Length: 428
Ligand code: GLV
Ligand code: MN
Ligand code: MN
Image 1 (cartoon, helix red, strand yellow):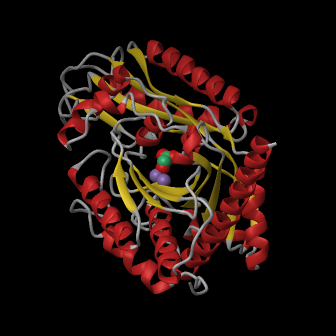
Image 2 (cartoon, helix red, strand yellow; image 1 turned 135 degrees about the vertical axis):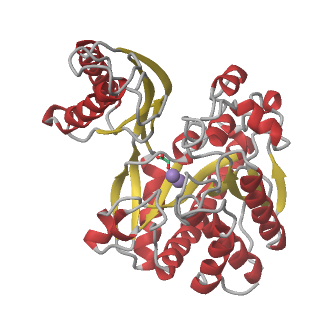
């Protein structure tokens, strides 16, 4: 056994670029949840991990789990993130964490290093809510938080259910709904991710350590008006579904900007219009609303207020508004003791860090229901994410991977000490 080397920025970068090449054509990276491309990314992850000495398992939800044995069997310390992307996303969201996991496995393998207990490296399936509305599908299943009925109910924009999409890539949705992981097999988990905000960049910091992950309420709204001829129909008395939707979009922004809702983010990211003709007044407009907050009460109050005010505006315009809840997740407070191990590791490595909240959703918020979890953020250039311009420098990724490795080793040592104490207690 030799000393474990620091992360190799060039190797980490080239692994990440190999992953980025797995994309639908078009701007940025498009590798949607539960598609053949996402499964190809999981296969690649599995190959790399097998070469680094891990044994590979794919759970029924499609999460790929690579296990590196420890000196003894026992609860594992884990890390990982996701491999799917949004439509026209970037190269780093999810990938930074899974590729950092690959780098950590490689470094340990090269050094012939031993940990006391097993390490597990996970690529979660279907984290992005972009396709099915719900974020973190794979980790939610792993945490035992999804039912079989939910897999049928969630649909993508073409009407394909999550269950059907899973079956189409060879997964078994019946088994997935029954395949919660056993918490006894885990001691702690750390997800590395890009920040997707500009706090670290502005403060010129190396890494962030997350204390709180925002929740999200997602709603599909449909405005129904009366389609008719754009030339023959006078302006007064129209029931223009798109004009009503336009007012509704601005109302969402207005409510979120109101100081009473400070910290709430409300976004309409998708809108479609029927019949979608230059010469017909829109008869129907369907759009999404995503309300995020670190305060679960304020998140739901904001969402309710937005929908109430939208409904009134639509009525005033002679249209009707129907609302359908797509997904609803509360903010999650991550446990202090795992975070403290990560910040201690950052201090040891001389990394400049701060503790910050996450505006985005992450697998960590589901995994934390099962095993105490921490999150490491690496900087995002200009805070941009979910766009092709997403960027993190190779050295910043490598610093994150170094911290991840150090944190995993600390957590492994802590788990081993706890196991020893338990055994001693049992022997008395
Ligand atoms: C996941 O990236 C999210 O939408 O927060
Ligand atoms: Mn992500
Ligand atoms: Mn994302």
